[in-house]
Image (cartoon, rainbow, N blue to C red):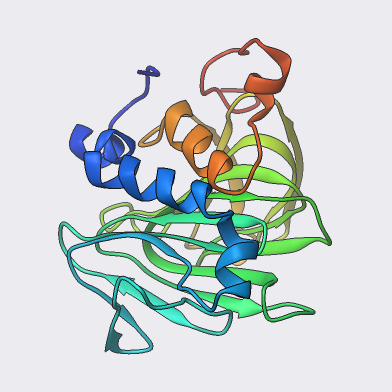
Length: 236
């Protein structure tokens, strides 16, 4: 498995793609045609649910759909993997986020992460955003990891695993172009804000690869057949 730095999370959380239940669910999702077939057949878009999660304050059921406009929260030892349009999401335990609607019902215009962590792969399309309390990321087609740690004084972590991302924190702006993990901290506590380089923490190549497969994509390193320097943001 990819080398990575653990910070406030466990190895088990990062190995979700090895679960037999996920492998079976992912195979079934792919076999029946993915998101297009799910929409046509009025099936749910939740690929796997582990433990307890809420959607708009109500318990999430395995066959239910998560729609744009919904708020999702997960409890301890609970995760949910779902697909909307050409984008796939893995929400880690103890997380709260919302997915806001874009031009169509199956287009996410904004992912707003309040607490916790989410791994996400976004297909090509109009510019969309990920927002945390301390940073905003404008994205097109990319794979990213976003975390709002409970013990980091309000700052947020963002890794552009591959793709082009326009990052901002307060008055600071940064264009991130990455083929292999370019990471930042979005620092809180000041009006100006700041973006500081970071190591690759709490996520792996394999997670991105499995999510990309759910929406018929491949990561940048799968396409090129090579990986770059591991998990170092600019200037680190």
